[in-house]
Each structure stands twice: as C-alpha cells, then as structure tokens.
Length: 341
Image (cartoon, rainbow, N blue to C red; front, side, top):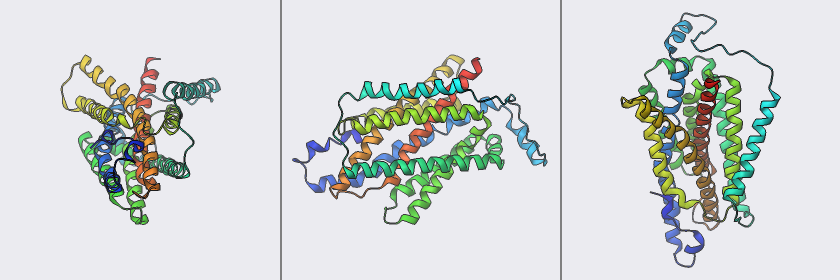
C-alpha cells in the first residue's frame, strides 16, 4: 500500500515491461486512499478540540439564536477592532520569505533539470484545482457560519460530528478517485461534494479572531509554497521514499488526536498527546507536501508514456488535505501564543 515500494522510474525503464508500469499506474489511486483517510480524520478532531476550548458553552449561543435574537452571544472574550498592524505584517512576510529560502537551502542542494511540458502542465493544473477547492471551501465555510450552521455543530455530540464528517469526506473522496477523468461532470460533482464536507467541518473556525485566521492562512501559503518548490525542483523521485514513514507518522498523529476524546488522561499525558498531534502533525503534513509534489511529477511522466491518464482533480485532493491540516495546526499554535500574552 505504500508508494515507498515503487522504485525510481529511471531504474525501471530498462528492466520492467510496460505492462508492469501500467499495473502500477492503475493501483496508484487505490494506494493513496488509506493515507488520505487518515489525513481526513486528522483535520477533524483537532478542529473540534480547538473550538471546544475556545467556546465552552455553545448551547447558550444556539438557544439564543433559536429565539430569534438578532445578536448571537457566546462566552468567548470580546475582540477589540484594531488598526492594521503593518509592523506585524512585515514580520510575518519576512518569516514566510525566510522559510522559503531556508527550506530550499536545507533540502534542495541537488536540483533536477527543468520540468518537461507534461510535468509542468499537470503540476499547474493540480495547483489550480487545489487553489480553487480551498477558495470554495473557505467561502462555503463562511456562509455556513453566518447561517448559524456552525453553532449547531458546536452544540452537537462531537462523535456525531466526527462520524458524519468522516463518512461524507471519505465517501466523496473515494467517489472522486474512482470516477475516470472522462466523466467530467460526475467527477467534478464528487469533488464539489468533498469541498462542501471540508467546509462544514471547518466552519466553526470563524468563531476565532479573523486576524488570527488571516495570519495562519498567510503562514500556510508560505510554508506550502516553499515545500512545493523544493519538491518540484529536487531530483526525480528523491522524496518518494518518504511514503512509508509518512504513513506511519500520520497514523500516530491521528491516534494522538483521538486519544483525548476516548481515554481518561492526566495533564502530563494530555500535553504530550497534544504536542504529538500539533508539532508532529506539522512535520508529517509538511513531508506529505514534498511527497505529493513528487508524486504528481511521477504521474505526469507515466501519463506522458501512455501508462495512465493525467488527473489533476485526484492529485489536488491530497494537497488540499495537507494544506488544511497544516492550517489548522498553525491556528492552534497562534491561539496558544495569544493566550500566553
């Protein structure tokens, strides 16, 4: 089930027949599903935990809303509107630029030749779908929040929310993966359904300070852009060997996210579990950006050889899950820093 089992293409060409490569290409969509299921779970549980800490009594807000009140009140602190802080914006931009330069210098000492037209085309199309999907997710999440749906999520049983979101996300994701690119309407319908499920899960994040969410989004774009650049310019298949360790890592992160919801844990054990989910998750999903970027380039080469069909919609789902998971964890870190002040 792991992409780690797939050797570099340059070593396969003189040794393996085209039938073997074709079978490998056909199995690629199936291989990514277990990992994406764990990624889907990893962006739901931390969201619920984060919002439960920030909003300990969402039932009160739901009752207020149901009575027809024009103002919806919660017990979170009142956020004072402040003028735009250009100094903080400059520090944030400098940090993002430093991440780009640092990651490139650390991981990308040996660079590959220029991308072929097929590789460039699939990579560009994939990131277009990723950006469009994230924009649709953000707009839909905002609309669900303003309509009051987020209050109902917070008032519901977290296990019900977790179950429904997982079933919806996994169902629409598998529908997208198993729909061939020729059936464009059906495939895009499943893709839109997947983004709608992500929006429903993320809509309660709008309870938080908009400035904090904006900073987290900027950090996420900078980190993902830097890591993607490293993956796109590194030598062929250099990071595909990360498949096995990353699958193990995302399983540990998912279990550490689930542990506080199931097991009675002391403060020390709870802190360790949260640290694994938070900082371990950042490292794991950063590694997935590298892995997925090189996987896209490998699939472009296979498509160029006629071994599979290029499918940017499928490729974009993995990147969306990576970016959402990184975004949620950056939000958690910024929230923790805000509490300490």
